[in-house]
Length: 215
Image 1 (cartoon, helix red, strand yellow):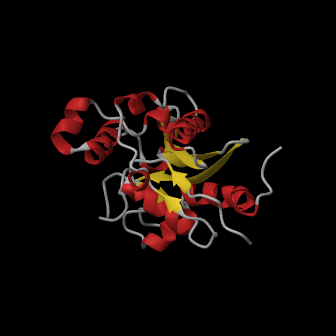
Image 2: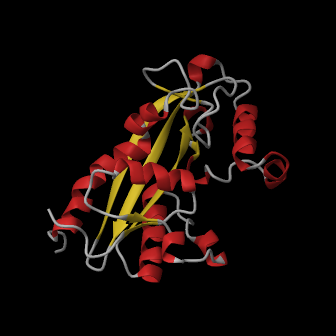
């Protein structure tokens, strides 16, 4: 199998996501580069790349934008936490769920976790079902494709563990008694919503590598 004629750009400003995606695609004959690797500075307009109500549309928006800026095949994701007791929220607003003053006080991740627990304070353990959902979009000069992964679980009544990021201290995946922040990193790498979406996307990535993609 040949290699890509150029790199695959991973369009995220999150170092956590970049490393997770690189790890999931580590056995593919590609070079996953981050935005900094290509010298793409962060612009104010990037704050407006996720205006849509679905993860798929937001991921595609980011992939198209950074493909236009870089000129190389681009992978982007949009992912979030969907809690049944909150009618699927925070959903596409997962990253900026907590009020800004909470984020200024505690930092974004801790503020989001605190805000989630506040919203679920009256919800008993048996009704705290949720899922993580991830949409992966890949854009090149000829086409685009999207792939979706999901992992079901529940929301703990208090944060547990020090690993992971985001809502990992509160999310207990089905089949486990521990949160993602308590579980070994390899467990999350094998079972997460992002890893599942990336496994679905891998054949398309490989088709880019061997030149079989396109209409």
